[in-house]
Length: 146
Image (cartoon, rainbow, N blue to C red):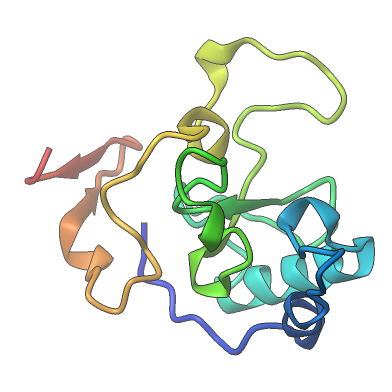
């Protein structure tokens, strides 16, 4: 993994949060498709078109990238972070095939993480990702801190 420097959030996300009224609470689930597209484009661009975890190539097209919540958006975890741009990352499909059931043994990245906590946020300014991992020629990834 490599460190991610977050850019400014898309205007559509800022506007979505600002739409809060007594009758309407903005959530990730009610983001418009245009706002989701803006998020995908922004996340993919700031990450240099690579997955936040495996560094595989991602593109902003909807069927090619997932919007990962580093701290899970579920109601029992971190619901207040679901629209926090600093909590959002671009991830590969993690072994899923669009519209098809896949074997969980093949899952990786966000798909495998699901709602679990991950100890290192690649977008944290203090993450220093490049010094935490070594990538060997045979594809193995090593770290001193298990």
